[in-house]
Length: 317
Image (cartoon, rainbow, N blue to C red; front, side):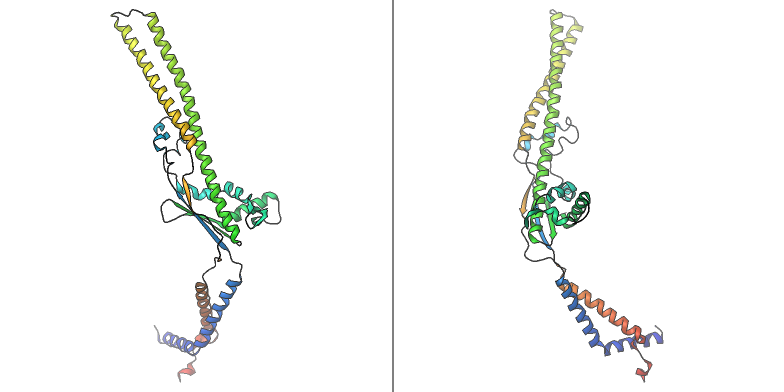
């Protein structure tokens, strides 16, 4: 560092030492003002709920459709006998379809209106109102995975604590409805597919049996004819294969029907949302520290800039 730069640094330090009361007072005043302003601003309430995914449906684990994974087309047996993909529920919670159903419900803080009225703007077309309401609702909702495995947390931010808690619980109810309907739909589709395959297998079995019966009626006495014996064995083997396929599908159809009736939620609610009693604000300590830092820095820049970096050569004499 040059001599001139060193003298400048010493001058700045000397100026700040002489004006430390002004620096401290300016920082404290800014911190207090920032805390007052933050406290006067409208506060939001955050309501939280959490759900635990249980994995596969219990009770009929041995009756799942995974035994037909090579028979069922893709998607029909996806929800059977395996753990749900919890990551997929994060975008589901924030999806337009679920939020639209929630917005159509009654506002917990005012039963005379729907939640849509709280989030929608006062002017504009109905389409514009719904687009804005869904966007605002999506911004107020936050879904994410907890540090504990299998736990999904849903939080809702709103100016009214009862609305925040009500929307959070409504989202859980909609997730349960979506889960139940989607799983039952997959089970019903699997049942319909197996029924169709069973009908085809029954027709194939009947055809194989008719072919064997016709052959035997035409060749009542096969004797030592090798060709006829071989053909009879082939027809008999075809009947046995078709019979085994038919019996397998019939057994799986019964299991699929049982599974369809027993499909249920794969998660349970750990904590329902309750109206929070304290608003969620930015920590006052952090606000005060940031305001004091900004005010102090501005004070130093003003002093050093206006008064020649706070150093006068006469002070050295």
